[in-house]
Image (tube, rainbow over all chains, first blue to last red; front, side):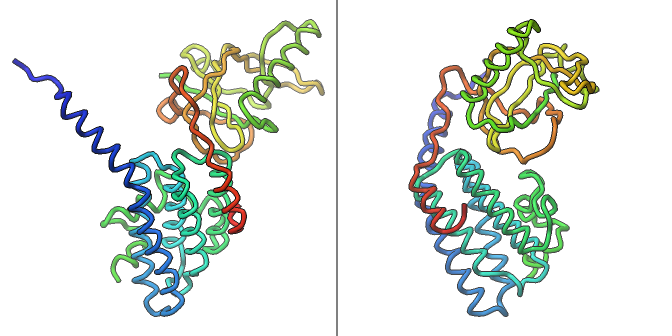
Length: 173
Length: 146
């Protein structure tokens, strides 16, 4: 007899995901604190900018991925903006701690309020503001600095074999 | 699989605002003897008009930077603007169907929206996602981020 869907297993998986979603805000707060620390490291020791940029990129990617999984779309968008900034900066030495902190501050405000979804008009305004900031700082105009969420640097960075020069440069450090 | 259109609702703040504006426009057309058809006028005529109307296409409205609601496209026909220039009239069903909100960048006119990329309808009776608390907006303002 053919087996059907294991309903219990589905329920267990759903419960596990719901539980992880509840923990997401706590976990991501630690990641944000790390991004904040790294932004200061950037200023304290510019010679390590490449390595620090890679770390920030990796954290932002992980936060973005998890945010998307658990329905925190806004924090994913902010993470994507940060990843875009890192990966589109022409030179690691030029990475600006203030820009990184602006993203970390935004993430902290969003997660403190446990905002799910896109954050409504305020969320839209926040993401537009960050996108403009990154476009200005990277010298790339809109929309060059920002592909769609599907084609943006978030996913490019996620693939170890990516040919994206900036991401590869950070990874190879 | 239907194809849809997406368009910015310029000057519209909320779905209720869109509803009221459309009621007003419809009433104005009715009073002018043009019939109670809800329509919008556009400069460019969709080449895929047949697909839009025969396969159940909708117009997805972008309100304040987010796709929030759709209306069924019931017809497309040539029309004349107030200045006498040729226009395309897109007729819409009255029902406003809320969809899962999605951010959309600004653009001019209308765009096609393939069914695969269209946001899903919100289930009947579903509450829209709660707006973020005012404290967050205040904090972001203090940080100079909005």
